[in-house]
Image (cartoon, rainbow, N blue to C red; front, side, top):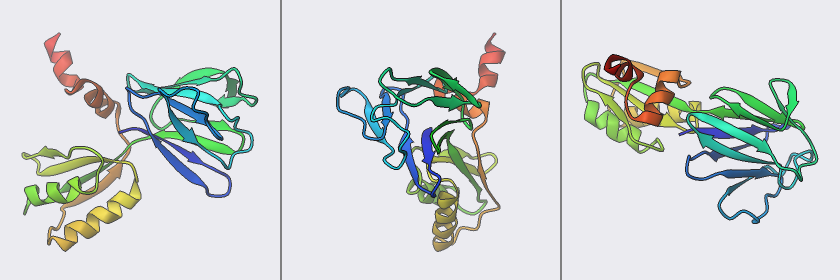
Length: 192
């Protein structure tokens, strides 16, 4: 699941999960004037207006629109802008805070116990574990990056499972396509 990560100049960090069905209101203290939007409060950033921008996750991209009452600009790709669409791995800036769009995955291979490995990983992630029986590979979207990797290693070790391969990676465009459509991009190309 994608998330927007706010990182301040003093090491402050806050995360917001993005869902297609729920818009997000970004601000220093987002008001309840839009009950349909989830608030994403970033209190440390003085240049962030109370209600700065509306965020919508759609078609594998984050749509960002500065609100009319926002007093300070949004900077995307080094340019001041009022609205833009960003992909995973990209970021925008307000004041001294950087907002990065990300989604992390953990992959583990185990010849010994694929089912037990999937059980361990299911307890760590925020969604379903993907299992490839042919390659004995497990994949799991996570929200906490390297922290999830450390927890995975510890949990696998506690169950006596030794991974053959362990990796943390950013999602590819194919991953995004699969998440949005429910099937790999290659299937659609073959169907044409």
